[in-house]
Length: 194
Image: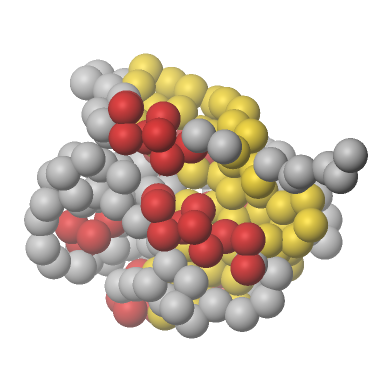
């Protein structure tokens, strides 16, 4: 998709704002009209808004109630619709999706607070990624995919171990001041009968 700075995106001091990683995710992601997209950790709703402009059927969720409300307002301000839920990864999500997208909290720090949940990925930086991938099969359509942003600051050995057994494709990457960000498309390996 092409990033659209013309979309109206209000902010809130307790919600992760659209940032370089959000733009990289948007510009690395290709979606199609009618595609069912679930965005976890929607923050301001900028990724969901872009998916909705492409004709996707969008469900957006965030553990932060202020983020869920802000995303709802931002989509409405742009004349877009999505189902908005307050959810901790999949706790309040129903249905199956073609794409599950998550701009993960990937910094290897442990901090408390609503806004800190948007970047604090714990000691290894993986944050909720293990749970996201472990429970994904219940929420993915047959050929579905998970798309996430990862950082070179994450524990790379832990990340590689977690991704073992999945089909992984790099959709985009960008060097930042102190890290390298990558957008990964992750698919389950399908075993074929012999």
